[in-house]
Every structure is written in C-alpha cells, then in structure tokens.
Image 1: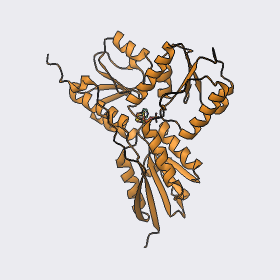
Image 2: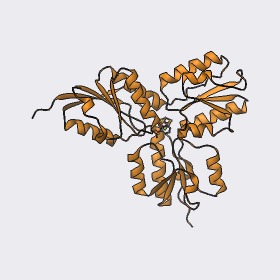
Image 3: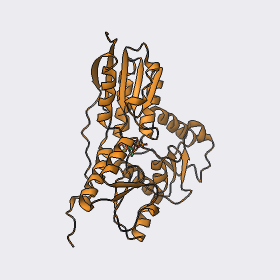
Image 4: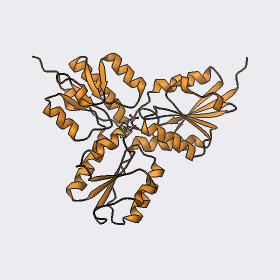
Length: 319
Ligand code: 2E4
Ligand code: SF4
C-alpha cells in the first residue's frame, strides 16, 4: 500500500531551553551528590516524561515543603518560589537547592528593586501559575497587582498612578503582552518600562519559529504538557498566525489523526520543557502513516547556557 506524501516542518529553536537544561541537571547532580531520595518541590519542569524519568532515578516530587522530611535535600522547581519558601527551609534547617531559572530570578530582583524605590508593581501573568505565585511572593502581600488581560487594566486600583512599574511572567505571548503593555501605558503614562523585556529569549524564539512555519502548514502540533504555559502559548501563536488546526500533544499517542486528514504539510514545535525524544517519537508516528519528508526551519541559533549552583559543583563533605 502506498502512503500519502506529507512534509513535516520542524520549528527550530524548539524544546529544552537553558533554564530547563540547568534545572534537570540540578536534580541529576543532587541525586549523584546526596543519593536518593532527593525531594523536588513541584514538577521540576512541566513535563511528565521528564518528571517520570527523574522519579525513576530517585527524585520524589511534592507540592509543598512540609511534605518533605527535613533530613533530605530539597530542590525548588525552575518556575521559582515565593520568598517564604527558602525562609521556611532555612527555619527547618534543610539543605535546599534553588533550580529557579536565572531569567525568572532576574524578574524577582527587578520587582525588589522597584519596591525599594517605592514603586507599586503590576504583574502581567496567569493567576495561579507557579511562576506568577513565586514572583508575586517576592514582595509583601498586596504590593503586586496581577493583570491577565487588556480588560483587567481598566479595573486596576493603584496606590499612586505616578509610582508604578510592571513586570511579566517569562513565558507569555509576545503579541498579547504587547497589547496589555499598551493598555497600561495608556492608562498610566508614568509607568516605569523594564530595561529589558521579561519574556525570555527562549519564549521569544519558540514563538518566532512557530510564526515562521505557520504560513506553510495545514496543521500545527505543539509537543508539551497541558500545564506548560510556554507550550500553550505556542498553540495560541499558531492559531493567531492562521493554523486552523493546532493541537497540544504530550506525545505521539495524543495526536488526533482525524483532524489531520487531508493535510500535506504539518508543523511540529516543542515547548521549552519538552524533550527531543518526544519529537523523534512524533516523527516516527508520521513515518508509519505517511511518506514523510522532514524539513527543519531554523529562525535563530541559541547559545545560552547557565551554570548549576555552587553547592553542586563542590564535592560532597566526607563525614
Ligand atoms: C520556568 C520558567 O512556565 P511554564 O509553565 O511554561 O513552565 P515549563 O516547565 O513548561 O517550561 C520551563 C519553564 C520553567 C519556563 N519558564
Ligand atoms: Fe528560563 Fe525562559 Fe527557559 Fe523559562 S523558558 S526556564 S525563563 S530560559
């Protein structure tokens, strides 16, 4: 039986960013240094495949610090934590390693700097997302006001419209955020503008890569988890760029083949927390059904790398 021809356009950059690479390495190195179990507060990154692999190696994932015993090391996820969490770990005399992405920590420091200068903060982000909770938790309750949409801007009740600054989650849609920023600037012309955008390089590049293939494809598959903010944004970016069919899939078994009927060009992108083996798995699933040609479309090369914290670069203390 002859298979129908289909071209797969692979968006590049895709998949792991420097912050995810570092966070996973932190868990692996902690297991090497201290042995199992090592506790991790929240999924280290939002990907079941990554979490299951680390769990098999001896990591134990918990949602709250008090679910971890005090005599084992604990790692904080890449998304960041409110200030109260490391403080609590110290109070309980726990060894902890912070896997917060340095680009999230940069936003934390920015919030603190503005606060010290007497500015009230507005955060653009998604309510309840761990990064938003962590960033808002850098400042006392009530100091950071959250906006999720352009409509939210009208309802803001600020202390002093002359003394405001804004920060954002690192994984937002570039275009949606620009619209919210425009609304903020219109309502509060004196609002302080960040020296550099908080949306990180990896988010920016992955969205750019989806836009670059959107015009050539009948459907887009984004590999990523349903709780992965940056991955969900890639689906939205695809839709906004004209992809009628845009699916978020955790792995090949999630693909809705019905929806792809008649397609001859399909785009594949992957969120910052999705490992490349899952891209390979999706390609293999296409090869089993179509006479598949794979074409990578690279918009930019990424060369960012982050060091792991010093505690993991030092040898374990001998008793
Ligand atoms: C930390 C910050 O934030 P998101 O839900 O996109 O996290 P995910 O774990 O999917 O991606 C890695 C990451 C971690 C992104 N930004
Ligand atoms: Fe860091 Fe950006 Fe990766 Fe998030 S997506 S972990 S902010 S590099």
